[in-house]
Amino acid sequence: MKINKYLLIILTISLFTMSCEMKKNTANKQLSNVNVKIETTMGNIVVKLYDETPAHRDNFVKLVNEGYYNGTLFHRVINEFMIQGGDGDSRNAKPGQQLGMGDPGYKIPAEFVYPKYFHKKGALAAARQGDQTNPEKASSGSQFYIVTGTVFPQGRIKELEKQMQMQRVNNIFNQLAAERRNEIMTMRRNRDQAGLMALQEQLIAEAEMKAKNDAPIAFTPEQIEAYSTIGGAPHLDGEYTVFGEVLEGMDVVEKIEKVKTGAADRPIEDVKVISMKIIEK
Image (cartoon, rainbow, N blue to C red; front, side):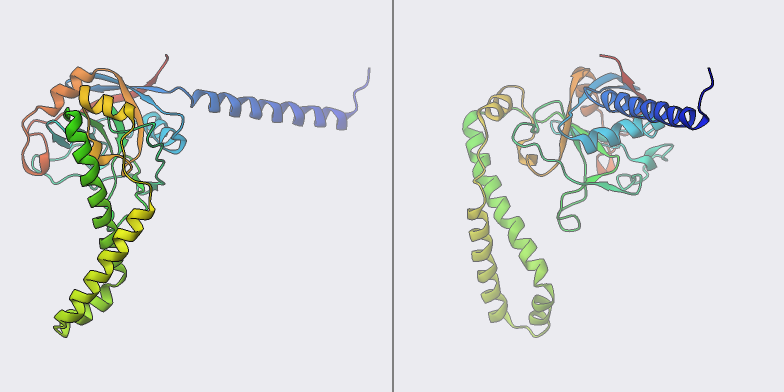
């Protein structure tokens, strides 16, 4: 039987398109329910990446597959708070070298899935620059931290809610002041104390009004249960993207958080990520 050559071309193109779609679908499936094994010089940690934070999940998987994290350090460690890693500049860093600014050269838009995911002990979250230079709270392209935190009595958690509400007002005030920086600097140069005091009162009132219009800070029953039993870092909630959690190896995380540290909370003896890899469930 003679086959029309144009029909053969169309069939070939169709098969190629189907193949590409199948590969694309397979890749998408592979990027759900992802677990990552972090092999360190102090033991292994297994983390689960949340599907509800796809940009952070996909970026972390990309960097793991590229070997970006291999050889990097946990460069910032604070007992009863967190361990932080992912600085590309920490690879082969000299003793005492200042670390914490290394990344792939891009940021990831914040993906807050709050209050479902919060800073309980074992939470995996993205580090970022401060609000003054990063008001959108965009995440570092590579740096991450694992929460250890502390346990809070339930009464103390209620006090934290009030403190965090006050901090919200303070953050809004600082933002408003930054927007009026030129005006403030002019008043300072002219030594206009009365003008500065009047503007301060005005900005405080505006900040309190804006904070009042936002939903009040109140922890969910799940947060209260976690923070009063296993612990965590509640003051970070809603400020940094939580994109996963530790499934295995929390004992290793606890060992790392207790190492001796020097300047800028860098461990005196390097704690290194040997490798990371995606693992089968």
